[in-house]
Image (cartoon, rainbow, N blue to C red; front, side, top):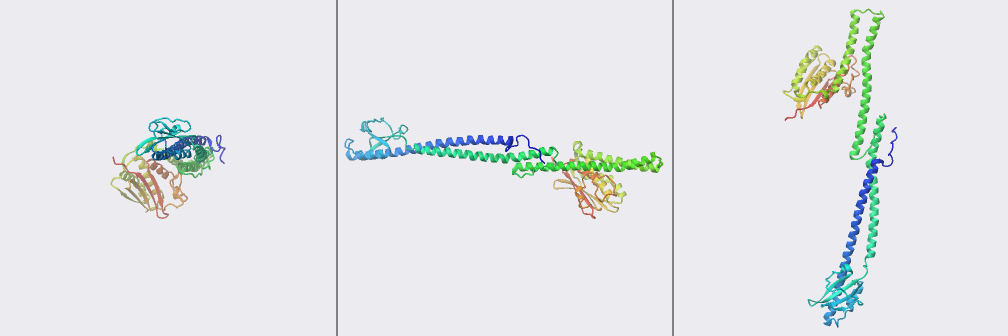
Length: 455
């Protein structure tokens, strides 16, 4: 059961609220900028359209007045009714000045300003156009417009813009809330799972499916939790195995000493030899544990240098041959000329030696042990292959575990630490060690190490 999520575990949480506030601020600024730009653009567009309409109206009125002037020959006899009608239909009052600036047609006593070009007074509600007759300017038409007729259209446009801005703001905030929840929700889930895991609920997992980095974060947490759980189980199993391994010689040693103390057995050389063997067995177990501890901290104590793995293996094999031959094994070697790695030779000597000791312990007389060193694919490979009894399929995944000796190894001496030491030493060199086996047809242990890079 996951414990209470604590303060701030509402809909969004502190991070979610900050993200939503940021979304809201960006949304408000964006909508405000777009609304202002829309209002300004709409106003400018309406003003431009109104100005163009007024200039077109002034041009038509000027053309009508020019026609009337051409028919009459003078302004005094010109019939300007058509020009006045066009002006009125455009919502403007018309006044006409002759070429000298004298009033020809007055809009009810209103006197326009002199010297205005086409469209010059549009901003003041007056639009002018020259009256051209036979290529000569006969006068100027002045149209004075009243209240802009597009004010209602402007109000409607601005209303729609305001409604669209509010709708955009609402949609953006809703989307921001959704995105914020999608972003902060997985983080909060992983946080709560981490807190529960830290309080002892080892079964807690995020079990979260999310896209991108959030999904990777959840999967990484679950993988970490699985690994911690496995480590805890291995630690408990190690403690139980160590206790079991130590208990057997201690019990035998204690029983033998009690028999001697109580006078039930004589402290003769045979009895003392048995007790001494138990003490030696106890010492070997303690020594193996110390060796494993040293191997697990090997990365802190490595003294790497340029090392020829083939030559190193040749020395290890030479040192191990007496024991291998003593148990009746046939030893073969296939070593390359030079396979140079950057490694601690003493640690590699120990790792390869442990593999040979493992072969000597489990193989039967007349079995063959083949040691190979080669370089391929940017890696140095050292392999120890035997024709011994092999490893059962159910035991193969555990051969590098601490104190693992398998179900069929009860008659074989050892503490089950040698291969665990090999794995720790090889891992410290940024390499890997693998095992493969077919029961009844032998086993193969392969060490992969990175080759030295050329300068």
